[in-house]
Structure formats: structure tokens, C-alpha cells
Amino acid sequence: MIRALVALVRRDLLLAARVGGSGALSLVFFLMIVSIVPFALGPDLNLLSRIGPSILWLAAVLATLIGLDRLFQADEEDGSLDLMTGAPVQMEAVVLAKVLAHWLTTGLPLALASPLFGLLVALDGTTMAATALTLLVGTPALTFVGAVGAALTASIRRGGLILAVVVLPLMIPTLIFGVSASQAASGGTVPFATPLVILSALSLIAAVIGTLAAAAALRWSE
Amino acid sequence: MRLTASHLAARRSGRRIFSDLSFTLVPGEALMVTGRNGAGKSTLLSLLAGRLKPDAGTITVEDVGEATLPECLHVVGHRDGLKSPLTAEENLVFARDLLGAPTLSPRAALEELGLGHALKLPVAYLSAGQRRRVALARLLVCRRPLWLLDEPTAALDTASQAVLAHLMTQHLSEDGLVIAATHQSLGLEGTRELNIGEAAAPRAATSPLTASAPEVWW
Image (cartoon, rainbow over the protein chains, first blue to last red):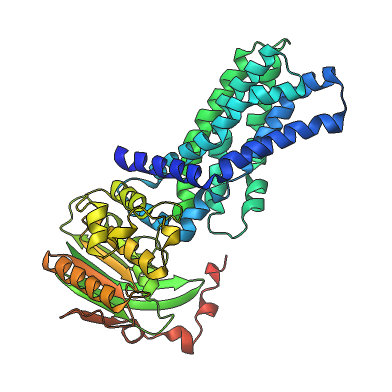
């Protein structure tokens, strides 16, 4: 079983590296949103650094949506999903492996690059580190929630927009606690740990519910 | 293994495709599923592969231990399950690791099908017939008793069809089972034939069943 899951993760990472596609694209999209906001708000550094964590988190939520629609759709179209149905592993395990590979190519680079992008919105060192940490902890929740939508829209052509409409409301709790944790780091009445722990809990809950729901959606899709 | 299907019925988009379809397959036996276009050949294979649920009837397997039916079979169909950016070898290594019970190496399997030179080529560069042969090579990289083949000879040249017939004969002699949906003769001896159009009269064509089954239109 472990062998099958390792094979799945390795194939998806290989595909991501070979095609280039969604991983790099969502990172570029992330950069675009973060760099476009100062143009809209004007060169007020105080304002930017105050709302900087919110901008980074909002950009992360939107960037997560890029490439999510192809997570299961590509496998559904070329018949790879039939292959996975016949594998001696549960569909839940297949989903878990695929989501993990997807997060490694989209969520993780996003979190790692966020300190750099924090410079664009005039964040100080502490807030920059805190935002990167919250993104590292919070992006798995975004990916797992998104996976449910991706599984639901796997057999729909041009399901990307429906996907966004379905999953964005479900990402709101993660967004709220992600932003409040990042802002707590730069001062305020709430200690940094409290929202961060809730954010971690959200990620864990999303991992369980998201995996089960996405597997159910894939089984039920026909 | 021994496969028994009894009184199977399938419905797609509210339309009854076939019903009351029964057959038994014992080791070393091949079943050719024939029928006009749209008779439900691919649907029958999807039912067996576990991608669709039967509307009625049961499918049972014996002598396979704890494994479920989808874990005992190989599917090669129109959608070949190959990733274009990956090489033929990478595709086969993935299939072998995912499905388990490895037998031949990807190189040996491809050479068996006369595609040894394509080992390191991305599948995107291969022709339709070559892609089909890479998909067929999956049958050889891991051992599974039941082969479900949907139009296996489509896009294959005559030499490759002969190779496929040879592989199927070999598989049957090792107590394997083959179910193939096809319009052409597969070159196998002693195959049984299941004609879906005759086995289950396509009642939908004469009396639309949609009116009696409005609940499925969601």
C-alpha cells in the first residue's frame, strides 16, 4: 500500500516538474496580486504594512484555486482514475496522496516565497516570519477544502469557475484565522499562539473531512 | 478465479441500456462481448471494473481470497490511462507500483509488444497504435487474473493484433480470464460470445423507458 502511495506522489511530482504548469503559475499569480495591490492603494507604507498580512493571505487563497480544477479532472479524462479504482488501496488513500503532491507543488512554494513577497507590502521582519509560518500551517487546509470541490467537478468540462464558487466560502474560516494570527504577531491583545493553534486545528480537520468527502465524490461521480 | 454475473441491468442517463444479462466465466475462458454500437458493451465493462453500479443484478467472484473484483482485473479501454509527458517506462513503472503483483519489467513487457525502442520516449510522441500497445504492456507488468479489454484491436496493425492474440492465448493457458468487447474476431480459439443486443432486447428503442423512470433525471 505504501508502495502504491509513494508511486502516486512521485508520479504527480514528476508530472508537475515535467509540465511546469500549475505550481509555477500559481506562484506567479500570487506575485501578481501582491504587487498589484500597492498600485491600487497608493504608496502609503503604514497602511500597506498594516494590511500586508491580509493581502498575502487573500492572494494565497486565490492562488490556491489555480490548477486545483485539474487535480482530479486530468486523471478522470485520460482514464488514470480507472487505474486507481483498481489499485489495492482505498480511494481515500489515493486522494490523500494526490492532495499531498499538489500541496508540495503549490502550497509549500507559496509559503516559502511569502517572506520575499512580504517586502512588496512593507512588512517588518517579525510579521514576515509570522505570515510565512501561518501560510505554512494554513495552506494545507486550503488545498484539502479545494480537493473536495475538485473531486465534485472532476467530470464537468470547464469546472474551474464552479469550483471557485463552491470552495471559496469554505475557505473563509481558514482566511480569518490565518490573518488574525499574522496580525497578532505584530502586536495586539491576542497572543500569537491562540489563532495559530486554531489554524492548525482547521488544517487537521480539513485533512480528515476533505479526504473523505473528495473520495466519496469521486466514487459517486458516475 | 471464477466470475459470475447474474441478471445484470444497467441504466445511463435514465435510459435502460440492457437488462437480465447473465454469464459465468471459469479459469481459462474468454468471453467476447459483441453488439451494435450503443448496445452497452463498454457499460458492461465499466460495471465489472467497478466504475458504474449495476441498476439490478449481482456480480460475484470466487477463489480470489480477500481481493475485491476491481483489484483482480486489468482494464484497457479507449481512455488509455497514460500520461503524455511521461515516458512509456515511467508510465509502466507507475502502473506496476500502483497495482502491485509485479511480473515482467517494463522493458521486457514493451519488447514483448515490439515497442522496446519506445522505452524512453514520452508517450505524447507515440502514435495511436503505439499508445495502445503501451497500454497493453500494462497487462504484462503485473499479474491479474481478469483482463477487461474494450476494443483491444482498435488502431493496432495486423502484426500487433497477432501479438495480442498470442498474449491472450498465453494468459488463458495460465488459467486467466479475458472479457473483450469487440467488433472483430480476436483470433482466439474456443471463445464464447455474448451478444448484448440479443441477450437483452433493447426495449428502450421501441418503448421509451424514460417515462417510467423520471426519478433518475437529476
